[in-house]
Length: 245
Length: 245
DNA sequence: TTGAGAACAACTCAATCTGAGAACAACTTA
DNA sequence: TAAGTTGTTCTCAGATTGAGTTGTTCTCAA
Image (tube, rainbow over all chains, first blue to last red; front, side):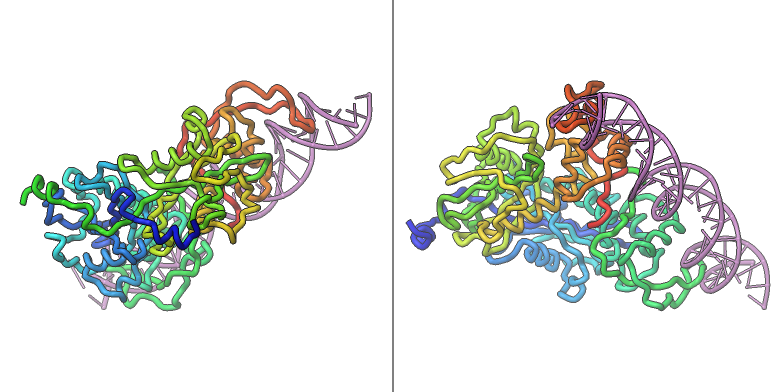
């Protein structure tokens, strides 16, 4: 049998039916707190429960594109603002019993977003909000989403150590203090301002100076801060290490 | 409609057919070189090409269990020796065109194995061998397996930095020099013996002494080396860093 | 207008860690 | 027995880190 014949005689229905979905753990920082995008499910199973935005992968759609589409639908955001969102694959969850309907394998993704507008509930979701991760309703999360969120948060904390992705939570131009606030928020611990400043400026390619400064000092005083933009490095060497874990 | 009715009326066939497979990037060290487990495909597509071991996920099988089963089938190994193999999820590959037959989403896994016997070709595979990664036939790899292998190798290199998984390439008891050889093989660069020794013994929980030493010195001379076994740490703090990347 | 407080940015300094090499004893093979 | 190899420990200069200080610029409120 040659390859031509083989493909012609191939019937996908011979194989066990598995549904493939993408889910998104979307993180942003609002008012100094780490927030997570959640929707409230309108339909069974888990109707009324909180869940990650997500849905079925379309037949001709790449996984990452599917995750980006779901994120766009749930946030109501178009291409421009979504373009500044970092999106990466987080992991795949395929426990045979994770969905009561059938076998569903879900490829979870992780998104780092600058402060975005409030999400727009669409037909799939009764409600959609940015929720502080400190207020997660662990008991009321659908499927295995509590575990996916845990994994996403741990991945986010780790990624700040060795990548410059913290800048993705900020505007295109930012101060060192704003960058430090991202680290403190995600890691949940205060950092030494002086040492952080020294470290950020010494790691090659982390940030580059714009030459400009903020228009005003801090809300409660202090001089105008210098402005930086993301550098060209994709990995930080040496990394910014959390001292304890 | 309550949840009961909903589940009863649910037809999986309403959803687009997607096949879900698991693949395994299995690494081991033989004769001082990093080797990868490959099979030669017997059936189309890509008949005659090299490919990663893998196959369809069974209906009631966890993803990791599926990967472990495929690895067992391909290596012909039973539970005992396979129990010492480290297996983790690597990433999911779901490009719509990656398989000419139909939409196939594959969850790739990464395995670290101590030196295993030669694999046994089964019905699926015309041939199965441990191949040195320096001799990879990039042009003759099936599907997107060249990229999966690249990702697996990079993950392996990174994992040695911050986890104690290098010990998984070794026997239950090993010397510091054998451990250093793992790092040198995977990273592809020589390391300073004295500094490596100091570092390994100073990282809490990386290795613990057995109190014993090897029966003989090295093959070409030198004193007997002390023996160690893996410690209890699951992460290395501080990490062993590659100096350049 | 001025004083108090805040915070950006730069600096200091001791403690620790790292890279490179040397020393030395214990072993091998020839 | 001699020559060479290797496991292990030590030394030391340079770099990095943690903690704190200083000086200046700014905001807010009296």
